[in-house]
Amino acid sequence: MVAALEMTNNREARTRFDDEGTAGTVCRDFCFKNGLVMRAVGDTMIISPPLIISHAEIDELVTKARKCLDLTLEYFNGGKL
Image (cartoon, rainbow, N blue to C red; front, side, top):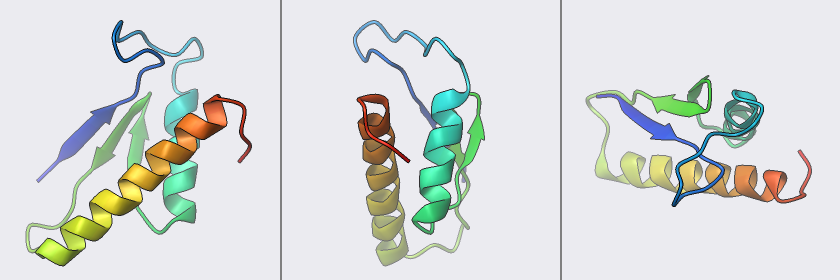
């Protein structure tokens, strides 16, 4: 099982960040700080959970991923690491 989340600086236009790879690195750092392992490939976040993952673990994974993506958005809107 593999999933990828492509980050963009404009959802409608689907444009990339000016400094490609920076958003992925920032998001990866938030993931590590929040107990989630996601790999950044440019500005794409890759996750590969085990095939024996439970429903509760999937819920936890999605909750942590959403938190880290929200923190990344906040960072690029003027927040800090």
